[in-house]
Image (cartoon, rainbow, N blue to C red; front, side, top):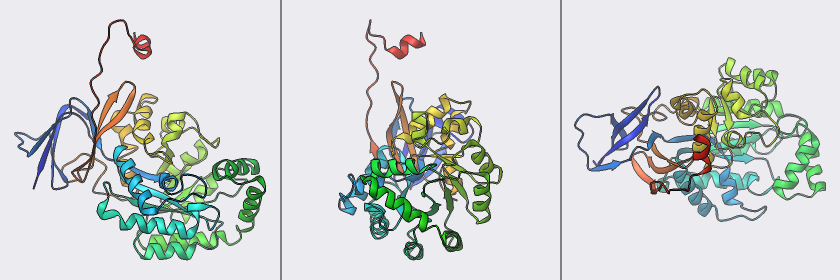
Length: 399
């Protein structure tokens, strides 16, 4: 058994930060924090960088863009899965939940058959993966055809998280018909006529949606699969989903909705891109406002893996969160939400999923990623060189 001693690190624990500290790992696990007289096969001097648990991303559909980088242009799926695996390792995400939408034959990779192929390809690639790739299946409630497909995938043990979503116009993410049409034309290269027909089809297909959702959620819950609702837009919607046994609320639309979710025990999941941009792309609430109000449980990368670590540090800078509290948004809290008891914190006996974070100018950047103790990403950021008479704008402001 090979052991690795990570030293000279700023170690982020669940409730405190240890300066100039160390962690001993081996056999895929964390052996000790600040071990006395540790001996190891390998010693890694982190030179004061921040050592955190590996990031856990409950919702990212970047895999869809890897498979279909342009509308109706599909790449080989095994190639796409390998590439997104590498992206997550570089982003410090050691447990990504790849979000795949099942929405009949609306477009490209969101076709039920193609989405199911992606799920099975991810599963087949697991023995070669750099990180612990998992699957988040998203059920579009207006799809009358994918319930059987999703039930089959659950029977295969290929689904790790199931969410239900309603992207019909007039509610949720698309508050108006025009916002829906603009999204479909801009993101999926539809003509206006095609987008209008898609909207009409969704409205027609809402008949029977409640019964389909109940059956699908019951199927998941009977197999111990965590479930979530998506784009909750009212307190009443939260109550309905909670009564159906849903365990999480993804992207609640308003602050009141987020408060309602948390008050009845549903962790909330908000977008890291929203934190970085300071706004929602669809006009919903700002994630930072939910963080400041204490009703943001988790952050997810949504569609861009690299935003997750940046958003955690931005959340700390823009609120009264401590670093351990901000880190929990992308580590411990998602682990708890999905019942992953073996990860999410730096503590003896847990998986050695760890990331080292270098501060490069104003950017927190991943320098190393360990997945179950294996170094899966490493790069080197040279120390910043001070040059006389060449003070940066940030330094000028600080002065």
